[in-house]
Length: 315
Ligand SMILES: *[C@@H]1O[C@H](CO)[C@@H](O)[C@H](O)[C@H]1NC(C)=O
Image (cartoon, protein in one colour):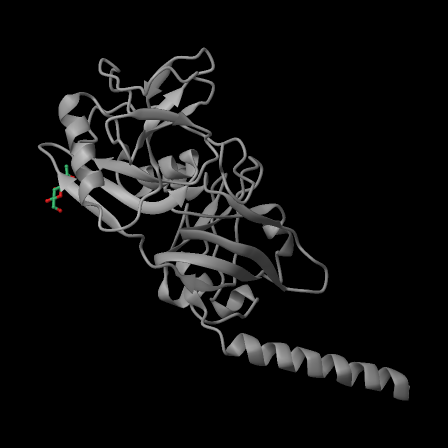
């Protein structure tokens, strides 16, 4: 008896210390806004970030959706590096969180449900609140998504998010007639650079002719921050070996460097001799050039990363 009481008090102490460190951290979710696919039973999306962790639906602090493939989304006021997320389930309907994916990223394609996955959560007997580690995944949007067709309800009683704000990367923009072209000083693999441009701008740059090439030269010459020796643009090579622009602009104009064999599937421009285009391994982490322009009638190449459950999407 005495022994088990000792064990209990030790557990109590550990829990207390853990609570103390948790209390010294800031729950980022409180500064965000929430949205969900649909609402039923008065379960508004904001209830999951109302600061009230009660797991009882009657306390009017849990959310409730009602249509298939439901999602709930937290929109943070900036881009954060997320370390962990604490989720409080509903005590009456715990099985509803079974299989819910937690996704983090900057894209709103498919309502944010195509972003990379941090975890899938399951009901854990005995613990109504669970913590998942996201190991520094970056994003503005955190989605809870149930993709199976038979499920209709996501019910969250509280979502707490911990992490740190990421400063925006350095960038420089040139305004052209119809497009704004921005060189971004952030080293990403080609596919992450594409996702980044499509989330914050329109696309990775396509160089359609000599005027665009001159613009790239100017951008590189005036960048007030150090650049990687090559910069990603929207150059991609198909499995059949044909290069194309992700924007689907025609490739009438080319500036390929010498005769290097085309064995890779991603292309960029040299920042040392900006007029030269060079292919590189898609995995290389390089600065990149985005473009903002008219979106109407634009039919850009869809790009879906089949490895989105991985930490990085580099393909
Ligand atoms: C380019 O940037 C300017 C200044 O920020 C803005 O007014 C304009 O709408 C932008 N043009 C495009 C096509 O995004």
